[in-house]
Image (cartoon, each protein chain N blue to C red):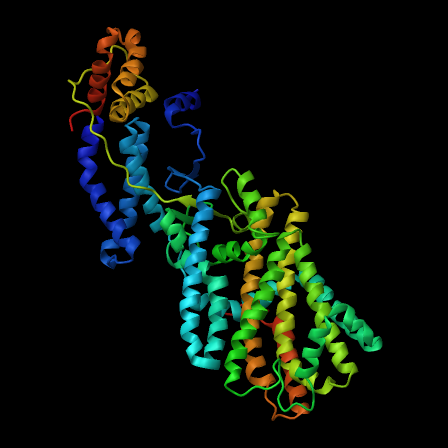
Length: 326
Length: 241
């Protein structure tokens, strides 16, 4: 068949397909008009293959190729069912993922909690050590925050209830930013994640040890125990996700490094979604519960301990049932 | 044997010399994508940076009126704009952030399908590493050495930044009486003759003559008539329109 004949025969069809594409791209297509779309797309692919095979001119082939490309984009459009996916992920997917990646989770936890406890104990025993880890200015800030004589608790000395909102926003930005950095650093063969895990572990440990040693322990521990369950776990998990990226680069097994990295990133980004959720909860607790002065210290410890058990129990036991909602 | 003959028949469509990236769709056709290089992506990023700056500037100055509540909203906003601006635009606006839209770019998966949440989140969170140690050094290095210009985030996310397709305008073939060539043309020769006729408008008359006269002996016509002969063959190949 001559090119001219082929073209004049199919031109109206291509025109219609183009118009339908335009509607789909703008998101204004009607449902009944789009039912013909897959069939029309397949016909177009067929005609494109024919045109190429018969050596028609590139000014016919190129527009057809563009139509096919645009059709491909619409047919394989990304479908987001965020609501149900997120629910399944929270109920079962996330704890399963954490258990599946246990070597990284254990390694990251050891790095983070290990360095935290070690510095805490060391600073408690040798008080001067704190100044070689944290700057004197920061130490002074921390002391004024957790001074038992101050009327209110929290990262600012005095805060009214209207400030809870401000702190909520601050915690979200600060903590999730740290988690993202800890994760992304893993791309540097895991070194970035190790660095951020140790850095945060050292700082938090030093501050905790120092405050306990000078006798501000009661105010400090009762403040951090509640949200710490979520916040510290989340940082460790972000580190685990980062270590996974680094490990894929260091030991890609039988894949190329690029392919191994791509696969590792797929799993670890899901872990990061879980981390974001944990940190949102942490920010909420930190802004609205931890800063409350009225509950007595035993109540705070009780609730905080309960939250730790909740987080650990959730990560260890949730989603073990095969029939859990997916 | 059959394999070889197919190869030669499709000779004109074989690997192009440019940076095009072929994907094969489940429908059995090859779609060419054109990956975008470093300079155009840098410009797109600069535009996005500017847009973000303006958004933050306007909203933060509005929120400043709200006192403490405004400060809280402000930091949430800051967080959203700095970490989620790209992700939201890429996923909800068919792979185009405003900067990419202006520069005619879009982000797709490696297989050419539109980008989803997890891939977009991966490539944009890892942007942090691309920016190390300063001014996108690692990203630029990775981009420059990769055949399809991927930065580290693209490598991990399995994504590709490509040029959006631009509408092509069709040239009119020069007038000539349709005729057949003195010998049977192979497929790639047919396409070459058609391209010659279609692109005549973009070339000077002398260059057209020069190109056509190369073929004059093969077509068995005097060099002065070679252009008319080729246009005639092109008309003949195209058939009635």
